[in-house]
Amino acid sequence: MAKNKKIARYKKPLNINVGMIIFAMIFIYLSFSVYTYLRRDHVQFYEVVEGSIVNDRDYTGIIFREESVQNAPQSGYVNYYIREGKRASAGARVYSLDETGELGKFLEENQDAASALSSENLSELKKQLSSFCLSYSDMNFDTVYNAKYSLQASVAEYMNFNALGDMDALLQEQGISYQQIFSQQAGIVSYAIDSYEGLDPSAVTSEVFDRTDYQRQLHQAGDLVEAGTPVYKLITSENWSVVFPLTEEDLTAFSDRDTLTIRPIGSSFTLSGNYTQFTGADGENYGRIDLDKFMIQYVSERFINFEISSEEVQGLKIPVSSVTTKEFYTIPVDYLTTGGDAESDETGFYKEVYSESGEQSIVFTPAEIYNSTDEYYYVDKSDSGPFKSGDYIVKPDSSDRFQIGATATLSGAYNINKGYAVFKQIEELANNGEYYIIQKGTGYGLSVYDHIVLDAQTVTEGQIVYQ
Image 1 (cartoon, one colour):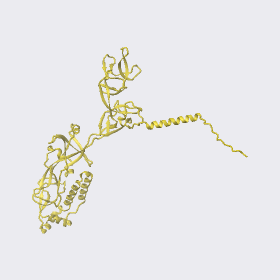
Image 2: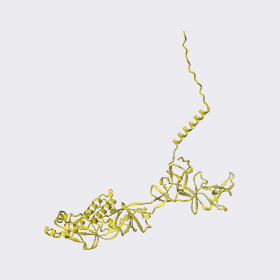
Image 3: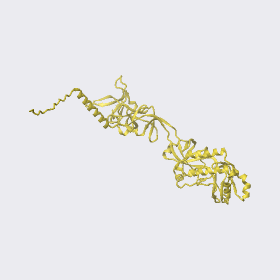
């Protein structure tokens, strides 16, 4: 009888060779490198580019014109003969007053007798609509009604009132009488009337610019007007003025200007006029631009929103967040010298040093220059810098000494082209709150395509930067 045999599995010995060891070391190294890379703080950078800034700010101004309000001689229903913004000659028929209101009904019932719209009339209406569309803003929705009334007046002029002379016989047959009102002098007709017609520009206050309670009367054909109430106004000059509030910054920026160029919001053209500054009745500062063109474009408006165009500033464009400040020692330019031996072109200063025994000697000390003026060089003031406050330096070929201590502050950004943060001074030309335009081609500054730290607060001078 056979006996049961127990079979034991043979264990192979672990053969560790050189290849496995090298592979394990490489794996551990790569794993550690990936881990440290992921844990490392990565500094964002910005590449310096050429650019420009135009500092255009929005303003709201009040329009002043030579305008006189004309009142109704009697009560009645008004019908206009001249559309808004059209020039009327002296003696021109402007509107009529009908005590019964029958004239309006008659014109509506006899539209076949009215003059048809010509191609020229249609072209003028299209221009009015196009102008309104370009300047429309949801913030001023009331302009929709103004445009509507203006178009209605235009159509009425084109269709009805040009034909009144041909319908006189019919009107007499119907027993309809009306009074025609004629212009006493030449001027531009406007039916938009507010309380500012008699206001002098020098009498403005900040309250005048508050549009919360601003009201404007704009009659349309068929309205009943009372005797002595305003019906229209006549503008007798193409000259007009825009008055607007000035901030302290504006007051300084425009103080040396005698002309200003503005661009009305929503338009593609600019206006240039003589500029003056004055103090209003409330003691605040205001600017005034006197113009002699395009008044008719704004004949129905009292307020105008516009930009003041400034000169375009060009240079290197960097983010505001990249800019920081740093303090430096200032050293007279006469103390700078070149290398300690004839073959060196390294720049620095002769510094006084003392041995432990108190023996004095002069040592050439290299120093990086961060900026220069006609009088001073700017040298690093940090703890790792070449000088400390109280150190003495000696003027080359002289016994004159200068004690380090005076300081000045520079604006600049951290250049990281070499893999570590190096402060580079900047000369600001303009800024818009988001970007600076700085001087291009400065001796100690930045150049196009330099890499700078996007947020200067995240690094320090000399810090190694991982991009």
